[in-house]
Amino acid sequence: MNQIDSQYTLRGNFYKERNAYIAAGEPGIFHCHHYNCYLQAVLLDTKDYLPEIKQVLIDSAQEVAFSQFYTFFKETPELDIEQKKQVVVDYFRFAGFGQVALGQVNNIGGIVTTSSEHYGISWKLKFGLSNEPVSFFTAGFLAGATEAVYDLKLGTLNTVQEHCLAMGDEQSQFILKVSEDDRELIMSQTEGVFQKGELPKPTNTTVDYEAIREALINMPIEGGTDGLIDAFGVLLTRHYANYYCNISYKFLRLFLNKMGNEGLGIATNLLIEAGRVCAFNTFGGIMQSNEWNALIKPMITTPEDWIYGIVAVANAFGWGFWQIESLEPGKRIVMKIQSGYESNAYLKKFGTSSFPVSFLATGGVAGLMNLVYTLNLPERVPLTLDEAVYKQISSSSNYFVPTQIKCRAMGEEFDLIEAIVAKNG
View 1 (cartoon, one colour):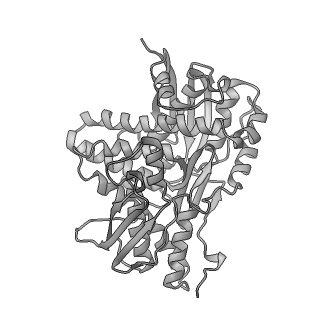
View 2 (view 1 turned 45 degrees about the horizontal axis):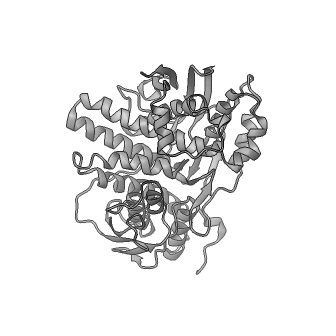
View 3 (view 1 turned 180 degrees about the vertical axis):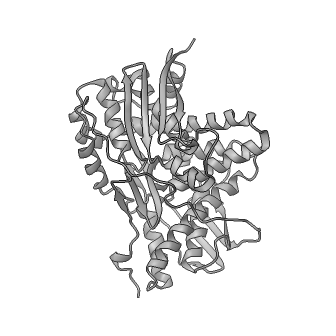
């Protein structure tokens, strides 16, 4: 059989009672190239102190890709090897990761080259040229997916990247080989310990959460012919929730093992800052996008509606149920999150935590307030959101600082995050 039937393409579904995208057991979430690259850069900055961090990035991708495709192929045993490869290639494109071909790959490895790959292109776009390969996610994805295609044990293969678009090379090249290391890779936590709930319906805003979620979950957001998703003013990905969680929590545990409890504050601040950067770029990009202007801006009548509008978008991104509990314009916000992907994953993989773990959400809530009130973006669009503008926010006399005051991973019923304005200087 030369061509895969459309019924065998892997897409998944959005489950409203969980506010989550699930594809072959793996929760998917939308994140953009700014967060993807910045979070990775934060972790890589510790490589001299944590030399294993690069392998953590590869292994975490390998675990989630293997888990997803292993599950899908068990449900579709009639697929032959070539069809399985096509499923992998198609999903990679669909999710916005780029274009790959597996024609030179078999059960003992092979070579994959690509001229369009999300991390290589995004890194160069955000940071400029790199002096080393940066596509750790793709390296792990290729190994895990190939293991699933050939029904190999997880961890059989390992990938080394030899050329990279971020280095100025014309193509990225990945070499898959049988692993010589005794690595202990573990199947992903799939959906984790999720909750069911209902979409909030705030009455103190003209923003219609239900209409926005319906429009966004039915919008054909997928990779184009180049395998990239150019939407909302960013390069978007339908990424693996468990990938973000696992690289973050493995990093955190490595940091704690090295430094003890004194390292907890340093590591958590780094991860929360990544959430702030995500909000600045992702939310800021959305607020200036054609999609925002067409769908959400007509609903807006007050500055606070910009906050509600972005929260409505977050409720369609697979991040859980986001609900504004309290909003004091220019002063304070309290955000309640049920079935947040960070707590879902942590509870399943590690059990109860002694400290809050919703780093993306914590930084994101403060970042949203900084956009609307500190930067006053609603009155300044269109505005180029660059490093200079981010520094302007950070040095402002009115800067929002977040605290996670409740965390499901600590035994609470939901996550609760507060961001209040702090007077700098």
